[in-house]
Image (cartoon, rainbow, N blue to C red):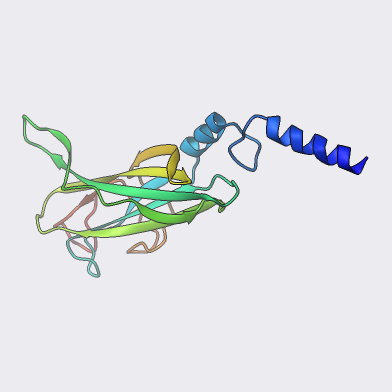
Length: 179
C-alpha cells in the first residue's frame, strides 16, 4: 500500500502543471505579482551631498519569488539626464548601462542593492532606469523595469538618512541637490 501511495504521489507531481513559486502560482501569476509588488522599485537615495559631492546614488529593491532557492535576482542600471534642447527634449541615456549585478537568491521576501555614480557636469537633472531579471538556470524567467521614484523610506545607505527621490540635480548643493 505504501508503494502505491508513493507512486501515485510521484505521478501526480510529474503530471501537475508547473508552478512558479512556493505559492502554487502559474508563471503568469508570479510575473504579475512581481511587477506590481511594493518591493519592486528604484530610487535616488544620494544626491550631491557634502559626503558625496557631484554624485547620484541609485538604490533598487526586488521582491523574491519564494521559489526553491535556485532562482537568482539580477539588476542593471541606466543613468539618464533630462535634455532641454528643443530637438532632443526628454530623458536621454547617459553612457552605457551597468552590467547585470547579483542581488541574491529569490527565496527572500526582497533584496536591495545600489550604486553611486559621479558626474562633473553641473545643473543637469538625472534619474535612472532599473531593469530586473529573475533567472533560473541562467535564463531570465521573469522581467521588469522601473524608473527611479521617491518615498521609499527603507532605502538602505541613504545620505541623508531616509532620502528617496525620483531625480537629482547636481550642482545645487545646499546640503543636497533638491529635485
